Length: 221
Image (cartoon, rainbow, N blue to C red; front, side, top):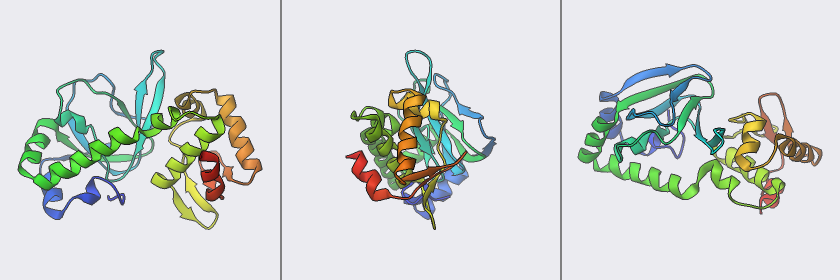
């Protein structure tokens, strides 16, 4: 279960064995919630397989997509640092299997495993710096630029090369993605239609294929 730059991939055999020793395995079906924003739970999760959407509620109560996590990623890591309610909702996008640890036990493990603590610190720092999908929304510029940035982020993190280009499965509906970027579903549909017309992408019911990465990068500048 190792995404190439994931938390799990950065650990050594000793750290992985220690985590497995204090974990239980849980499975979730598509659409099921692992945790909800505001919950008092303190479990820490590591994704073994599948994809998990990270959602935040805005002032109007709408769910905004913050990030997408996949194999090898750690979730709920802030539970080891602060005793506060959950800061985000975690929802399975497809069939998901996770390792689940009690937060305080994981915190104790970090205190005895320096490499584990260092890797966790790096993950937290990178997430704070990068801002996830909300970082794309806050980046400004035209709808075309923001959609291009979002597609690039999805492609780099989760895309799979194929004979046709880079294939990816959107982590949310068009309405949810548009809301995250601060404009309407109709605006997003118009931008995607324009990208299709230029031959940059093709879209299916559950999958996008990026054919011209260089053009997407140019549009994202």
